[in-house]
Length: 302
Ligand SMILES: [Zn+2]
Image (tube, rainbow, N blue to C red; front, side, top):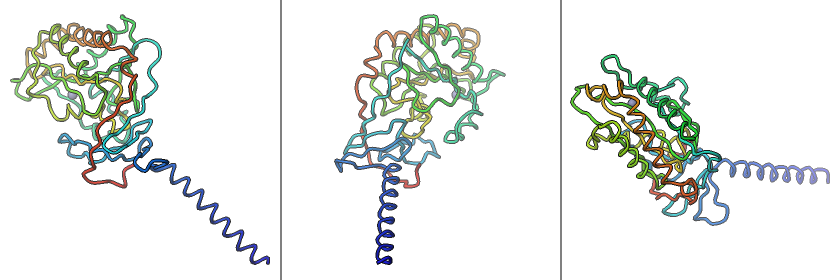
């Protein structure tokens, strides 16, 4: 009897333990709670979403869910709405190549990308100077401003975001500014790009160099939310601006000697975008992006 009881207790313990293990496992991995066709993917877990590499050679072909997770349904990935910012309109500015010693592990490959230098002018110094001027102009108009280095907070949410860089072609031949935004993000990025492009051209008198927009601009890490946790939320309208070529004498003179005009162009573009795009539009509708199959599933992804 005691023996039978002991066996029964042992069996019960195993069942309870197995239940706990199963629960723990289901918390740590994608779940199929009700509908087998709907997959809830928690933040940081792999999602079946094709990630374009844009020539980024060490980018492995997998995607991970951003903060807040995603909901995968056949053909689409739904990104739940983040909490919209409260208070004044908010803009994030990234200073390209700044504070490289503070990047998280997932971005350490960036540490070698220190930016261009020409005639003693360092790109990071130009980026920082312009960012601070833009920040001051926006604050004067009542906009809240965050200025970041290469690293941004995971899932950063704002009414607009701009990444500032300057270019070098090694020859001095190319001139002009370039802009891009990533795919699979909110619907307002074309508008943001256009308003900044128009105001920047007006203020700096520089030409737009659409011929040399690169794949790394189109896949810029700070907007690559399905690859990096330390990316801005896909709801935050974002663009990257290569402000001109430091390697070109005319461009460099504008960037260094007329940084007030450079900053005014950027600030005017951002302010126009904010005026034309109310916050409730930016955060009012759930973002749904197309799903494509993984090229090679990576089960060891975090
Ligand atoms: Zn750069």
